[in-house]
Amino acid sequence: MLNYSVLPDLVALAALVAVFRSMLRRHAGDQLDRWLIGWSLVLAYFCVRLFDVGTGERERWVHTLAMLLVEMAGITFLRACSRFDVLGEQPVAALVWTADMLAYAACVNAGVQSWKVYAAIVILIAVSATLLHVRTRSRRALGNLAFSLTASYVLALALGVLLWLHHPEYGAEAIMVWLYLMCGIRFAQHWPRKTAGVVVTVFGFFAMASLHPITWMLGALIPGLSIGHEVWNIPKFIAAVGILLTFLEQQIDRAEHLALHDPLTGLPNRRLFEDRIEKTLQRAERNRTLAAVLMVDMDEFKKINDTYGHAVGDAVLCAASERMRHRLRKADTVARTGGDEFTILLSELTEPQHAAHLARTIAESLQQPVTVEGVTLRASGSIGVAVYPNDAQSADALCALADAGMYEAKRRGKNAQPAN
Image (cartoon, rainbow, N blue to C red; front, side, top):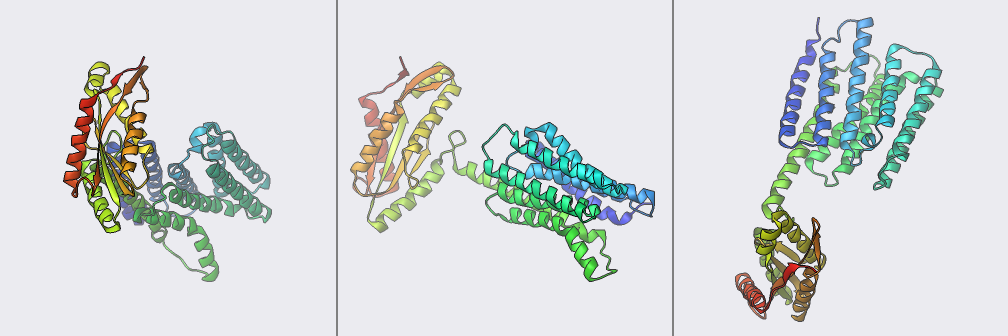
């Protein structure tokens, strides 16, 4: 005999797991791997639920295995949600912590009554959590580590209180509530921009965390009320759909970014620059301020590529782009508009001399040595400047004038050669 009522959920989740696997083939990464493992564990939970029929020893084993699978899925999701992989940093402590969590649920389902067993497990959970966070090698996320350690102590304290109240059987549900509540919190922290996918996912995890408390409250308020497992499975699908939606939004954002930015330097490309210069000139006309275009061309860049290879040339371009970006205000723009050509857009200027001063500053910064793969180079740049509205009144004319000024500067002298 099988519990055929689980089949619709099983088929639906199998389809979602197939989608995750398809995404993994296109965009491999540790995070997607963990999501795939987590949802595969939930799929295994539904497979086990197929045998959830009858009563007695068989039902107890089915319930135990189902709870352990959902708990392992929660631990995997928690690792996938976290920006900082504490479990990966300390694998031994992570293994002990995971085993303790699973052991508590297994003891509850096995009907263990000894308070000493549960007390030992709770102490091990607290100790292993401490080792996980205190002995981690990276100190980049002290705030996250402190929050995670505090949350682990809260769980251990809750389990201890349940043990003191002689209700250790509620501890398994408390662990489940804690795991999925932490998944929702960590997912929200991992994705600070609250898109529709993020909101749906966090809601799904919080709903999964609230299942057991809601069951207790409904049981107390309405004795004899029976709610089918199908209803309680809805939050799982909400979370799964939300995660897929989040990754889809991420891919769309990435595609939009690549369409408007240079893949090597990450700077705006010509298309984005043209949009920004039109808006900047309109704002300058409206506010009666000045704007300027600086055309920058790297000197003797082809010689660098031919002599040292394209990898060195790319590194020189990246170094040059960083130096220019660090010397601009947030309101200004530096774009890569050609192979070794950059265009800088300055806005809200009050004096035309400001543009010339910045051009000299950038020229000096570009002449600083760049060391790439053991080779030290001095890669200068020739710069042309045009100011709106003094020199030209349209974007095309402004860029053409700056371009002409750049070529004139290049004719006056070049300086791209290995440093002595």
